[in-house]
Image: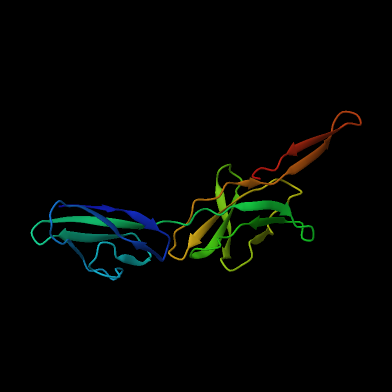
Length: 196
């Protein structure tokens, strides 16, 4: 009798079917006993359901034919949601500030979105807003002044268990600098949009 199991992962408050596999050459009936857990739908059977899970849990099982037995465990990890992304950063014409439009999860236990803006030091990201999950996927950065410089943004998703996704790819706004060159020439220096 050889019992093997498969680890798995779920999102916050998710359910998993615990998968077991027994290699057995005997003729007896295999029974399963799971260590008691408030997350299990049953403490017997080859693949009970576990959940809702808010943190990583390990479940212990014994398989036996009454004479031979084997033990194993299954770990179900609670993982962060996949990363949402910024669709576009533009300038709101009426307010004159940067406007972020971002995609939102259609499913999943999203609690809020975090908006990050690159600070004065390259590669250092400051949190500038928390957007509730039931809000529109739009944010106006009232501290931005797109006439002065370009800005870089990222977004992340935090679930109801407190797990934060990886930050999205950055979007950097376009910026044009104009200065007078020699004589009647004007220099146009473009910093192109990044992130589409």
